[in-house]
Image (cartoon, rainbow, N blue to C red; front, side, top):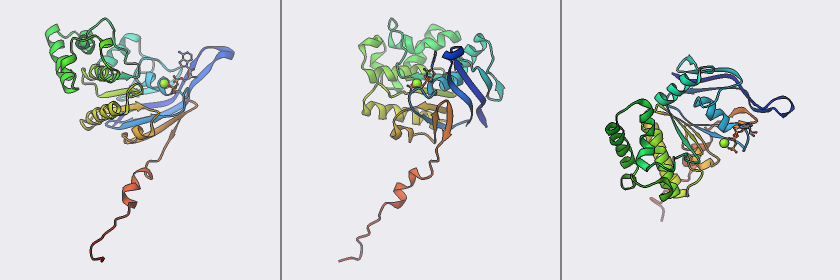
Amino acid sequence: MELIKLDNISKFYGMGDATTVALDNLSFIVEKGEFVSIMGPSGSGKSTLMNIIGLLDTPTHGSYLLENKEVANLSQKDRARIRREKIGFIFQTFNLIPQLTVIENVALPLLYKGASYVKRMEAASKVLKSLDLGDREYYLPNQLSGGQRQRVAIARALINKPSLILADEPTGNVDSKTSENIMNILKDIHKKGNTILMVTHNPDLAEYGTRVIHVIDGQIEEKNRSTQNKKKATKKTNKKAGKK
Ligand SMILES: Nc1ncnc2c1ncn2[C@@H]1O[C@H](COP(=O)(O)OP(=O)(O)OP(=O)(O)O)[C@@H](O)[C@H]1O
Ligand SMILES: [Mg+2]
């Protein structure tokens, strides 16, 4: 089933001579349950693409079908509702609210949904425990390490049980051990049947995806992965047996 269908999407910023074409007639389909890695040079339009798919921004032209429903030109209010119901965001910069504790940050999306205080806290606590942050619930974000903050941001993205996870450089600010950790969390989420779109500059991390695309000058170039996973197959098998 097609979850996302972008048709000739363009996004312009600014006007007249100062216009930037961030996305240039881009078309793109994501099937439900895919894990798509998005690569490409700085300024090529990756975050703009994520923001449009995540309904944080609207395209200048083009059609965007989300679950077969046109969403390109919905009102702010309708977009916010769909975001709350279906989409979880993980940003490189975490976007945690510094004045709120870890558990309050994670519970926040449920507040917008109208869940009771007790329900919100219970749900937040559960997801924090699953990410190994059970003992940090009442810390403030600035009392955490970068990797812990990133896991809090992931917890917050997951609390609504969104079927679509958008991760814009989710491991941009953490060390390689933590980034592996985060990738394994995303892998688990994907295994449960959720759809993931992840922007990364790291080709090794892109390999976690079931598909890799490149955004170049606001357009998509699909990369064929068939040659990439064959290392194992060509590995020499040295059978010592029988040789003396
Ligand atoms: N709010 C904005 N106003 C004007 N121009 C913008 C705005 N947001 C993005 N752009 C421009 O659109 C282009 C694409 O930006 P975008 O953030 O999508 O790139 P990116 O691929 O995510 O880059 P990076 O890898 O550095 O994060 C850039 O040229 C950028 O300057
Ligand atoms: Mg970006």
